[in-house]
Amino acid sequence: MDRPVGSGIQPDPPLPAGGHAAGGPIFRIRGLCKTYGSGAVEVRALRDVDLDIGRGEFIVLLGPSGSGKSTLLNIIGGLDVASAGRVLFGDQDLSAASEAELTAYRRRHVGFVFQFYNLIPSLTVRENVALVTDIASAPMPVDEAVARVGLAERGNHFPAQLSGGEQQRVAIARAIVKRPDVLLCDEPTGALDYQTGKLVLEVIERINADIGTTTVVITHNAAIATMADRVVKLGDGRVQSVAVNAHKLTPSELSW
Image (cartoon, rainbow, N blue to C red; front, side):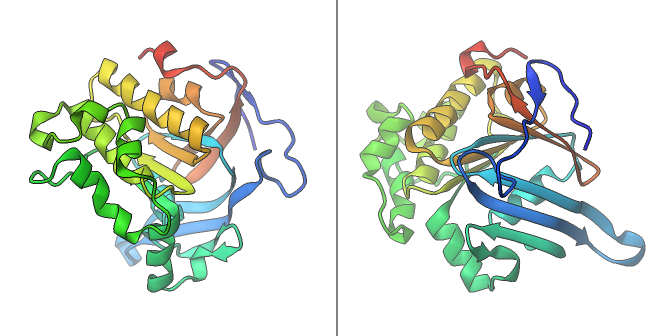
């Protein structure tokens, strides 16, 4: 596979035995295909995707609209199923899982952060975060999750009393309170201004570093890729390149 170099991102070094990153593979994806519709309206969203994601790794999925980023994220998050190929989460084959098994997988192992916050307006920050603790086997204290995103003083506020960036941080707290193995973020800064977006990225980076949560962030913003361990570039449903970031930047150093 051709692996272009630029903007401080260097080609991947040879992978260790097993073909995964140094932290060991949490996901092993082989021959992944996803097709929507049929006949004249058939859309091939993913085409023969092979990818390993290491445990504790910070991955950015980069590519234009329609490149397959969200489809890939939804499949590894258990929100969608592949048309062909395999996705292994550890030893669990998600591509062969039943709907009940995928539901259990999402509840136990995955936290989601989307572009829009999906908070319940009538609940406070603490109450929005506490919602998911009932489905977690060993959740962290709600106040700890709220403090980790820098909102300890805002716990009794309602979403309407918060800025967009603060609401997104509540969404992150809600995603991490159940101590997920994987944090999946789909354009988490897409609805935010430049400075607020950087604050949200700082929170995501800190969660990855402090808790060791495997983190996958979708973006069309190439600048954000410079804070990742590896950058996976998608185009036309295929992996176009995979590159390691030799000189990671902190969110405060980003500019776009």
